[in-house]
Length: 103
Image (spheres, rainbow, N blue to C red):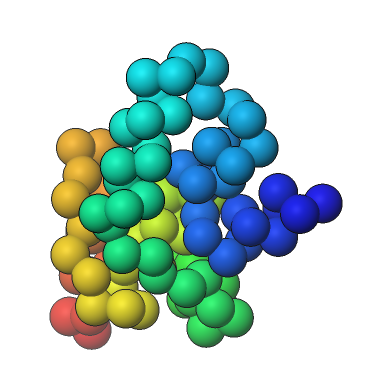
């Protein structure tokens, strides 16, 4: 159960690492380095709410996005953090978000 509480607090990459899901020592080292360098952003009730709102907007626009990506995008937006990504889902989320902001 502690793993799931940590996932809610710190997000998917740290969840995988803390539950022993990283299969190789090299990957564990990379995740430890990420943990050292990347600031930890709280996934608050407000972030969850923003993620749900974003999911509704994406669905309304006919865009299906993994829940983890919605949560990451909502967390970054909530905290004003820049999101570095190379994933088409985040591009789709941005298009839906910008459209909603234009209205």
